[in-house]
Amino acid sequence: MLPERLQALLILQDRDQRRVQLEKALTQVPRERATVESRIAAHKTAIDAAKKAVTDLELKRKEIEATLQGFEEQIRKYRSQQMLVKKNDEYQALTREIELTTAKIGETEEAEIKVLYDLDTEKEKTKAAEKAVRAEIAAEEAQLGRLAEREKQARDDLAGAVAEVDKARSAVQAELLPRYDRLAKTAGLPVVVALHAGKCGGCHLKVSNGVETEARKGSEIVCCDNCGRILYFQA
Image: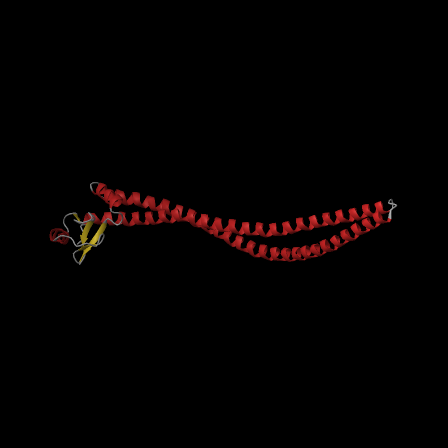
């Protein structure tokens, strides 16, 4: 049997539970936002890594071009020197240097061709990967937008819930509020629970016969002799 003065307390408890749910929902939003932002950062890092691979190959290509220019300049110097030497052995030595440098040019040009091929391949891969990642980033940013909307709605709902709690508290007998508040902090919500089959609806332990008898009467405020929650009898 439910004592009449517990009805207002049950209404307050219902409003309080709603308020707590909304508070918990709000605390989850920053964690979810951090997770989404972390994924966005990872996507951007992947894009940067792909671009760096292209940049590295472009730098390598430029280095090869500089090397080739150096070889060609060396050959021009050798040929200029050949026009000035008078001894045949000196002329032949310069010819061998020209031949060696020409061979190096051939090897370097082969390396350049490979780099150019790798560069074209990497650019295509990067372009495709960036397109896919950009789509994923857009989806994650849309999720951030939904989180912001959810957070705003939860804050609005929480403000309304707090107002409802205040309204419900005003209807509760003044002497019951301190006990309710204390139990809400120590035992946690709910603090007003049904006594069914001899067990407390909060801690689920069997109460004493005296507590059950008083709860059946429904004339006084009765508390669980295990957890201290306020009880009302439920057949």
